[in-house]
Length: 111
Image (cartoon, rainbow, N blue to C red):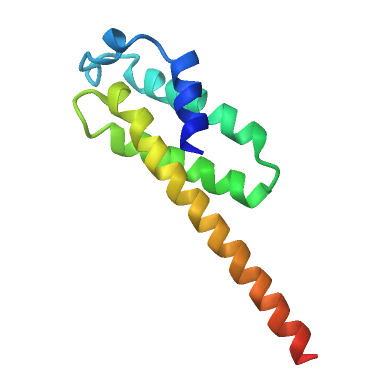
């Protein structure tokens, strides 16, 4: 997953110089962070077929955007924060699927 996100960032994100300005006081700051979050997330959401996984990825992206806002350069740190949060969300989804499978196996045996 992180390789896909890193490649997507390389292809779509504005140059680093644009991202190293403390924009939190500027009127468009929230919009810029939201747009970057959506750009980074779009490529991953399109490839995911499971609705619950997509919802988890969206939540993780929002959490990363909120956390990025606490840094002086939110546009600079957002891609890496999203990478970490999305990887966590993906692992969580895999664990949930595994628990669901094991629960189904247990219910089948109980019948």
